[in-house]
Structure formats: C-alpha cells, structure tokens
Length: 119
Image (cartoon, rainbow, N blue to C red; front, top):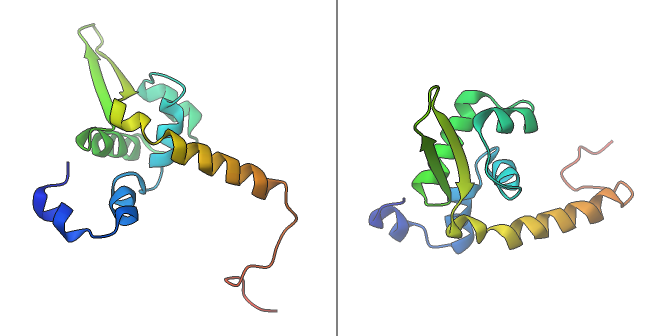
C-alpha cells in the first residue's frame, strides 16, 4: 500500500487510482480476474506479449495495494492462484465503462486526431 507520506503527496483522485492500476498490463490483468481465479499460465495464455517477469511484478503491485489476493496451495509442485479482493471488485464499473467506450469507438469511422502528424 502507499504509505501515508505518498498518499499526502497525491492530490488528484484520478492520479491516485492511476498510480495503482494505470501501469502497463494492469487493466488487462484485472479483466482476466473478473472472469475468475487465475493461475500464472492462464494469464500468460490470455495476454500474449506479457512476460512472466512483468506479470509477476504487476500482480505483486496489485497485491500490495489490496486489489489482488494470492493463494498458495500446499501441493507438490506448489499451486498459486490469484483472485480479486473486495477492493479489486470496485474497479468493475471502470472496466465496464472502458469496454462500453471501446465498443463505441470500434464501430465508428476513423476520425482525425489532433495528435496525428499533418500531411
């Protein structure tokens, strides 16, 4: 979790949330967890391009912030599963909004973006 000093430095609520879930792959990892518990190999199959190192780092960050729970089963070899906590499930309306917006944008014609280089 962010310590008290870090929390006091962040004044914007949007910045605060993005500090926690805005890193690359985090939203897609959360999307997978909304479908249920996942093991490392299931994330790797569902998210082509993510490395094991990056996946582990993102899961640990989200676990540290209380969004993801890691459960280790005493088996040989050890089995580890990840799931959302109650706090993690609070992200659902944000993901639903992103999904809705993406659906709208995918059905629109291409538009001019001010960030595109001018011809």
